[in-house]
Image (cartoon, rainbow, N blue to C red; front, side, top):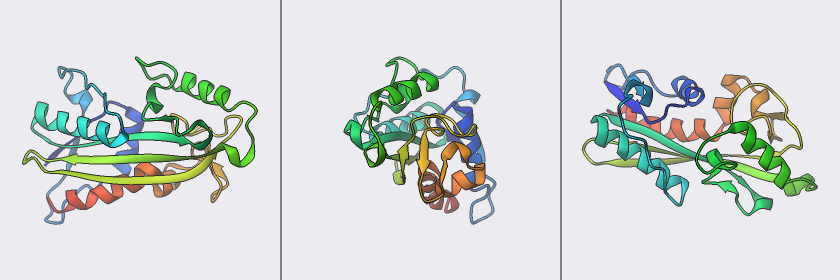
Amino acid sequence: MEILLATSNKHKVKELLKILPVKTKSGKVLVYKTLADFPNLPPIIEDGKTLEDNAKIKAVFGVVHTGLITLADDTGLIVDYLNGAPGVNSARYAYSDRCDNKANNEKLLKELSGVSGAKRSAHFKAIAALAMPTGQLFIEEGKVEGRILTDYKGTGGFGYDALFFVPKYKKTLAEMTENEKNEISHRGAAFRKISKYLLEL
């Protein structure tokens, strides 16, 4: 049974394949495709006002254009001092027309320049959406609390991971092994919850 992951982000795909089930409860093998397997699709217009809006847009897009059961997510970094920014604009924080992780991180550090301690508190939130060809749509949420460092630590992960420190583990997400990160991350939590629907297919 083929499932579409509505993303072309190789880092995200690698994470998800370690989290998602490989078989349903009835024994059907789940084969995951990505947008890279469908190069002729039109671009997805992520113009939602919330993370949930964008996750739904991507999931429904996949079903409409491929006919496959589709999984999608939208993730945001919510920084308290910045009144929730970058939030829904996390991937395009520095530039509205493209994702540039280095520029996003540099902008975040600049926005928090001179801000210290508890005022740098933040959390990551992920919304996972599962759209079915039958029209059903399932939504789940995951979250992880932390704070933004003043400099990078760690070389793993992607996005803001090297700046996002998780006090409980005394590490940034970028310092964690893949398994450690998947165990506690916002995306890991959201997709483990949504996996229950895949198991029942």
